[in-house]
Image (cartoon, rainbow over all chains, first blue to last red; front, top):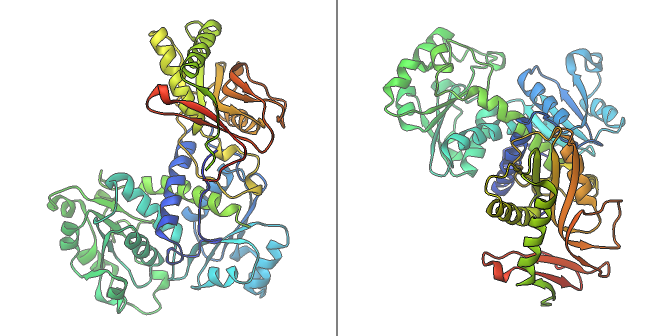
Length: 310
Length: 183
């Protein structure tokens, strides 16, 4: 019999709320699930008596499919809910919606919501394990975990490694979760983007700021390139996407000017030709598709570790 | 702290391993279509040694060797805290194979049940046998028995059997404690 897995919390609300030991335990468990999902029969019966509700108040393809696959490969029962086709449009409150789902005996809730803080709010009011699948511009913890896990797979260890996050830092929950996660794992973190998309006082999180993409690529071991989130920009922060691509877009020629191979990550969906050119996105240095594969293993690990802490 | 009563040690310990290896050879010959599978983590200590012994005796044998972690297949997931998983190394499917599961101590039979569940996810074996170093009789919760047994122990329920593996084979021993020691 193995030793007990000591996970410190009932919920995954953000990387901010979990310890470095928790992150390492998630990665260790994900290693084993990665082996499972590469078998001919990609399934274990572990969560066979657990029901998980995926509640998505915001569009998502990759994260929802990734969570759903993770749940199904753990043999959990899955219910999917998306706001557009629900009673939310009839004026039901968030808490009523969730409590109605929970009274159908649901054990775990995976939630995405456009408002920051919704998972934390729910965790104090409902009796289920809450997993944050992205809340507004706050956190997206499983994305940060799979990003760091994918980097570790290639770089060995992140202690002292230099990671740059490029793009719309202001509106990005992926950026914030990445900063927390990478810092906890001992990496040096730099953010890079147009001044209008870098939040004020971001240095207080212990990160460097740069406005020069090429210099940042030369500095780093891995670059996590983010999408420009036009849907979150209530006022124009950029003159045009074309100008952004001109000054902050990464292409293969730029990668060639860096004297050593650096990793390129992107949480998706990619706007090809804006933040990343096609030749860079499809280059050998890009580990974008490995990120997607690792996402399922990471989410299986999180579900497994949280599922029986009721 | 209680040292525990020694129930198996050198030279009998080593003889027991030799006997188990020879018993497998008697049944399986060249080990065609045969998989030896150690159960993680402690069964692997035994299976590594058995596999090495078999390889010394029949260098050209055809046995496939795997390590199976049963953490994700346990039936008590809801009843206890999550356990840390170990590596599974199974680079074969067990369809139509003769399988020997190897574990250190057989007690309630729950671990073996979980291992049989896990095996299902690697295909349909032709038949499955079980080899254990220690068979603790009289406390089975499931109708499971071992086919190859190092030694049998009859002890009260609270007692705890520990197999201590050492890099020096002369120091391997099995000890029986009056009650389970945490940690």
